[in-house]
Image (cartoon, rainbow, N blue to C red; front, side, top):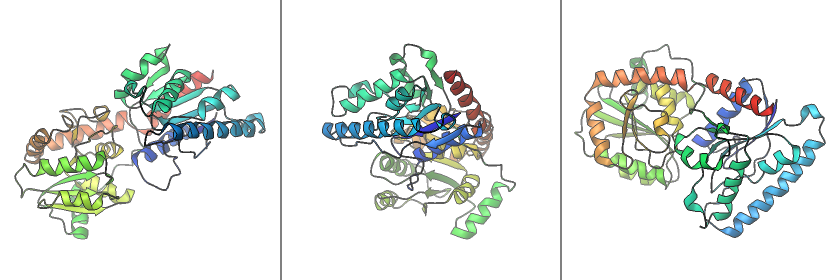
Length: 375
């Protein structure tokens, strides 16, 4: 089928790397793997971060105009080239879908959405206009793919048929397993960056922004300050506008800042490290976490949002209460000193990621459900 794809928060063609862009691209790849032709319908960004009603009205007007133009363009195409289905990825109260519902209705095609959240507490507030638009989009959707299980309790009550809600675990294209041993990767990175192979390598991967990311970095620094030094080193992969603030958090901590890394360099660190660590404050679920688990890396993560959809507590890593530095420190102290448990968790993490979070499985689920609504 021909799929018109849209991501109102950030298009998959954005030059700015992020987990959101990565997931949007993964959805496109999964549908293409199933044999569907996916076209990016629009790069219009509907995000309104400040809660200004007038701006939301203006964005709604722009979206409606773009929708009408798209309808005219699609209707001018031969029937075989028109979209059979509209697919919107990631809409929430700050970034609603002002285009998809109009186009889907105008062309009389199914409307599918993925990664949608609905926050009743936003009703009547600064984002009320956008909030209501999200609610209407949910009600109109023929199928909703729920990637974050934490969103389901607020989304499901809006559906007259709960079978329209399809749980879909976070997924990615898992690279072919490395032939080299972790020790080979460690030796390579140690030689390149001057790292001590005799220590436990703790790896954190995240952008450096003055928001929940900075809060997570601060909590991580606090937790590390509570455990004995000397047997471990922290490696941080990532950069951003809050880089100076992040680095200042780790004064006195044995930390190496690798900066923003390419996918291949990250691959090396995932396979060389001993433990993935991230407090995950206000995190949806985290693609870096999924990448780490797929590489066979045990994790200590804050139990926020849909993080539990990736990490199984006591099986693939440890989940600690969100925002609890003492609990995070306790988990760190436990796994830093227990190599056997780390290795056991790591092995299960890799097996679970390959079995439940691969691109091929997601492609089959998407294909089945999209064909069902098309019929």
